[in-house]
Length: 68
Image (cartoon, rainbow, N blue to C red; front, top):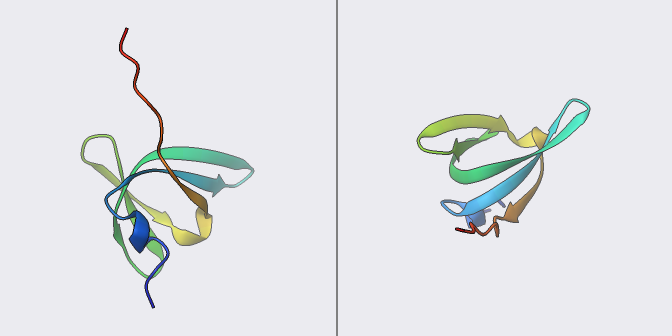
C-alpha cells in the first residue's frame, strides 16, 4: 500500500503541524519518508525529520511571489 505522503514527494507543500498547543504551517518540500517520519526540506538544503503523528494536513503550496 502506497503512503499518502508519496503523492506529495518532491512538490512544494505546506505542512500543517501540531506542536503542543500550537498549530504551525511549514512551507517546504517532502524529500523522504520512513515508517514514523517524513524528511522535510525547508529552504535551501535544511532537512528536518517530522513525526507523522504531528502532521495534521498536507496542502499544495500555492503562494505566489510578487516582485514589485
